[in-house]
Length: 231
Image (cartoon, rainbow, N blue to C red; front, side, top):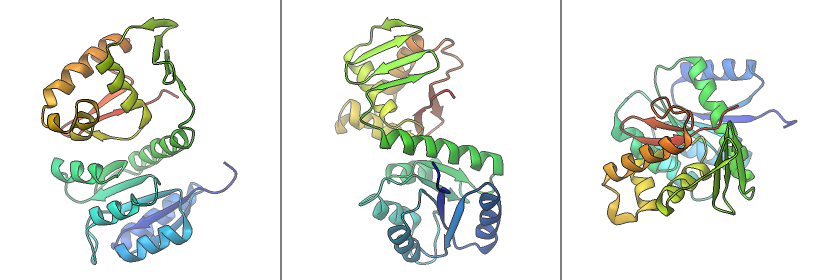
């Protein structure tokens, strides 16, 4: 990318927006800020940023509503910020279309790591027509429904493959238990988290060098899973 990546920060705390502007500008990001939800939505539409950092608690509307309205027309990565570290808040934000979630106060390095993950997710999403994903010792051919580890084909059941393909198609993004269950097993099974845990264990045994220390399918406790690639 030749252009400076543009991040829109929607947060009503001046000290947060000032700090983020300083930190991100020093790392070669272009930064815009908005203190209200409606202003943020207008700027997002007018400026088409590469990423949005969104506070959940805004003076004019809930950040969840901002996220839902964004998702009506854009797939731009959204990282949600909140002072509350409740699983319900995280799940609601992610189910509303957020890509990731950080609790205030957060470390700068952690934020930058989440931004890098979101950038990779955006690039992969733009190239979603690319049927083969190669990461580490893993090769996943979405067109041919073929998975290889260290060059050897791995036999997956239909459900295992459907689960893996869904995670891979949203690489880097946290997917909630409900979202995964609804997609793989159907809406009527969205509460049966144990189904998901069993199949994730099976996938890890087949794909990971050490299933107890997974490198690809990562658990977000109480929230869901994400598939990450190895640089």
